[in-house]
Image (cartoon, rainbow, N blue to C red; front, side, top):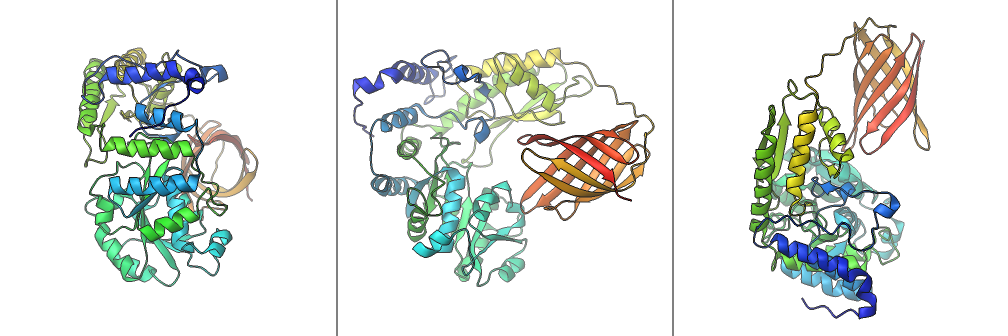
Length: 524
């Protein structure tokens, strides 16, 4: 692909840093699988992160949005930077970019979206409004329209928000019979995640699409983390629309995505999306992201060599595994993907009898050290997975050294906690108030108390019934809750002090949500 030259006056600021990164990329041998100790230019050019007090890290979480997504291809970076120097009409650009992407990926039509979530939202809106200007303006009020979306129970997730945002009600199904019953005059679409291609499910993706198509219901699949394959396995199974992230294994702009599939639905999805002033205005995609994503997809079929990338990543994993397994009690195994749309990972585990660290403690140490290393080491377990797609050549040696350092410094086995007689009997009903950042809520709890152990149930304004487990030692209490709404699970950890008629402390809301104070009062 040939891009017009940038006037020298506009590129001076970026030239040295970009050329340094580009040289580092090719020195690393991405196309050949060679491994070279070449890191991104951390000191070159304006330091946009450090001047804000934010220290970059080595990213072993691969494609996680919260950590910046995967490592962008150098030609994508060049395309984004070059596109930023010129102005074009977005409708004209998308009219050319969509057919180019569709031709490369093997679909009838395509559009660039604001990530895979934006693709799902616009695709769902297309199935509801169908390009009708009045319906597009009315969304997310779907009264008088088809407003139901069927979804297999095992394919629910937090990402259902992208569909529910349109004003759709999710109808869970778990068998072909329940699917047939759920499909009706109010069904706008059928939805699901990439796991619908997994084996040994109650029904296959082909059976799913055939049952839906008999009732005139289109099928939309969220395959955000997948690499778009040609021929496309979802379209081959009859799927009407499939969404991909541009910032994951495609290695394009992190906030771009692709919606691929039926031409009429793609047209309706683009009509309801930005830059048009309608429901999808908020899921905006820029000219730079469009240009960068086109180049990322072109690279997939030209300059990229996925087999060579996997070989390089496997070589990194072999090095890390050989180093960390020198520490007694540490084991590691390479996990190969089940299909070509994903990539290998490294599972790291350790013996708690030798290494007295929980995964979350290790993750915090890796992130607090120098250089910082971001990992999936979270929670109370004794293992985590390491993923490669955001790492640069040479960083694997640093990761191995940091892991060895932290494992060797780790304390021995943790002693079992000593439980003291409870200071109060907590059996009975409680009313709990949780104070959030800008609001509050009230829960109703019922606890059973047996020695130091607590069990029970709770009800919140959102969760009709959730479970509780916990313990009390002297005045120290810890209660864990587990609830569900739609495709989302909530797991909180309440900790604090307990007296006969009052408990209070802080509740951990989840790794993305921080903590909040809570107070519980006994209900007579």
